[in-house]
Length: 275
Image (cartoon, rainbow, N blue to C red; front, side, top):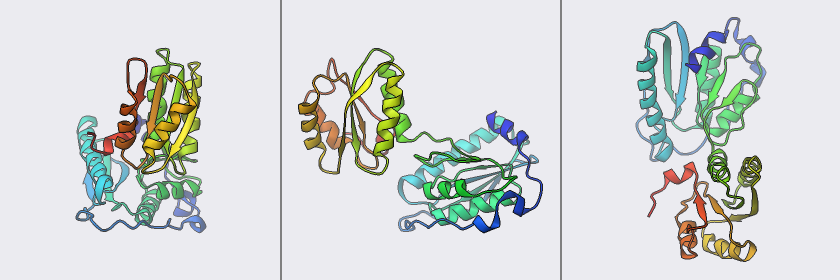
């Protein structure tokens, strides 16, 4: 009932200017991605309670984003049944996977009496909302991957860095000491390395080496790993947006995983078919 606790502690009295600084309200840049999208979902309302909550989901977005948004909606319907429809008045808006629209919908929710805003899932929109100021704004529970959070905007979705760190820590807690991190090259690679290293340090373990790889270079990177570190206890594969399959195939050709070497995956593996 964490949501109910947050709701009861929030106040949204006063005018719009008290909730957000009007001068700061400018929508973030939008995303292309309308192509291949599903039909736009109408605004949905659930519950008859007096506490207003708004949820922002990419219900008609193309690909994985839309699929995940619709799964979240299904889970929300179950949650509303569990907690009782008389507690909340929940409004669900379709962001279409577009950051500009998500930002506008979030601002509207924040300034029209919502006690809590759940979402958006779009990272640029979440980052934008975190920059806005206001003395009486409601809390925003952002659902964006790899979002660091901000004043009054809380990251509630585990990113790949958290997933990799948790998996590695689970092995370290059982005695594994030497780890290798294979991470897809990109803007989040450095943060991934720090997050995993910090998690391992709690258990006296460490990263022996971190190797960044680009699409198509997985096998080459695995060969390089063999020349840089001897007998690691585990190899962490953080594949980002790409499929982990090429890297896993290269590791398998080296006998990894094996009796003495484990492989740690992340939540992003679930987005790709595995052979």
